Amino acid sequence: MKAKEIMTAPVITVTPDTGLQDIVALLLEHRISGVLVVDEGRVVGVVGDGDLLHRHEIGTDGRVAYRTWWQRLSQTDPAPVAYVKSHGGHARDVMNHEVVSVPEDAPVARIAAIFEARHIRRVPVLRDGQLAGLVTRADLVRALAARTALRAPSPQRMDDEAIRVRLLEELGRQSWWSGNWSNVFVHHGVVSYVGAFQREADKQAARIAAENIPGVCGVEDRRMPYGDWMTF
Image (cartoon, rainbow, N blue to C red):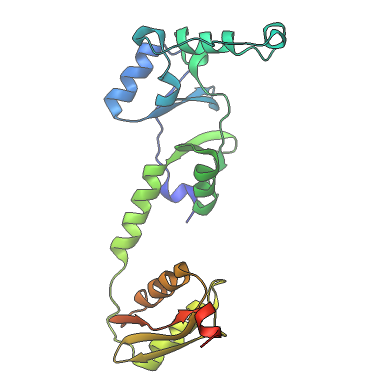
């Protein structure tokens, strides 16, 4: 799947000059956790609910308690930056300037990796450098819901050998599968694993692989831990 297939469009945006009160109203009205800041079609920042946590209006601004003498004299002094964030009245004052964007043909896997690595909730989607849409974590969940709803049982029940062949093909593509230590048998739709496993997670993954094969009605894992198997 690509970004353009799951993105939300059009996108609710503000300009750098949008007032804080208007931003808060948008978040509440549309029940969203953040808005993109756009200047002449170019994404220049994002204001999320996390950017509004430390505000003087509600007494959560706090103060930078300690600054080294070097910070006071250099560009690294956090105090003025924190003051702008907690007292500024426009999007340009409170927005996060570090925005990660993707092109509209970016794979969904890449977007998920960005969410996880950067701990963010939304990624703008660009077309020729201009904002085309937005992908949020909620969009990924909706895509998952759509795909799982389409997953239906196979109309034709596979026989035991067909199940075994398909399962072995799936297992063979996985780095965690210990094919040299394990055997797979299928009888009346019940998959049986015998042999040895290295990690408990390997057993769980093998169970999931079998359960996803149409026609499987049960899974039995009779393998023993590799260490015990070697001394058996």
